[in-house]
Length: 129
Image (tube, rainbow, N blue to C red; front, side, top):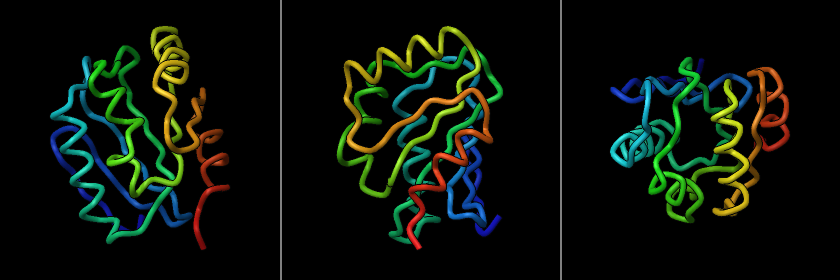
């Protein structure tokens, strides 16, 4: 890891391959306060550079609130994001992902993956040299 910061909601790191990794530590409902905390932490280590972002969590039933889904797809949040890759681990997360893509129409390329390896491979295609 090149850089790393930890906040109550997540551990955020910049990997050597140019992908930022956000490992979410929240165990159930993901709220705006969590999103804002992660956004500020991402800003602090990105130094103004855009990254493709890998999102992981060990919690199978973690789902974002409606407000968070709207925020995640908005321009203010995507200012330092090249692409979002989410590793999803349950049927409920997969269903939420499909609804999110249809209703929120994210500003940046967004992918949902079954494994971290698949997500990283896809995100590497967005790394700026």
